[in-house]
Amino acid sequence: MSNDIILQISNRIKEKRKEGMITLQQLAENVGVTKGLISQIENNRTVPSLTVLLSIIKSLNIDLNDFFDKLDTSENTGPVIIKANQHQPIEKEYTKGTFYYRITSFKHQGKLIDIVLYKQDKNARKGYVSTQAHEFNYMIKGKAEYTIDRIKYVIEEGDSFYYDARKPHLSKCLSDDAYEMLVIYFFDEQ
Image (cartoon, rainbow, N blue to C red; front, side, top):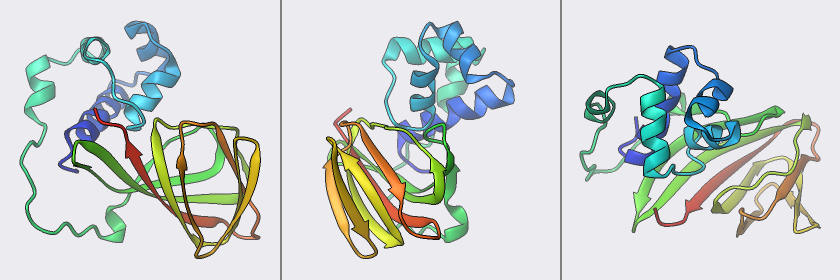
């Protein structure tokens, strides 16, 4: 597990919800928020307010001390090596044919950085999405069309781009096989 405390909290919430066989919808109703917000919290796309976090912990019937006791707050001072088999599959949008694998996540100068390998199949069904971050993307393999602010861009192998992902955006695979892209999310200071 990453040393980043926010990522650990997100993962712990998801882990405890699944252990309790509680759906996103059930947890959202118990907390008094939307299912989408719970999903964004679990997938490290947004950080909950303290009130929402405490409500989630209470709704999951977890002792507050137990929830926080198991978080790793130690600092890593050496190089971090992440093997390919350590990439964690994560769910982001409710789509078919899109796959996210978290490589690592950490804080740098007060900002959360999340590094993900993204794959999208040719026939993926995906709508517009937005993320509370800026993104740097590097196309590893394949070809895609990105629509940002109603402008279409074609991205090919070796291309990279940086943009404000808070703006709704849409991607479409243009290659015969799935395209693969390295995505680096730069979240605002928390």
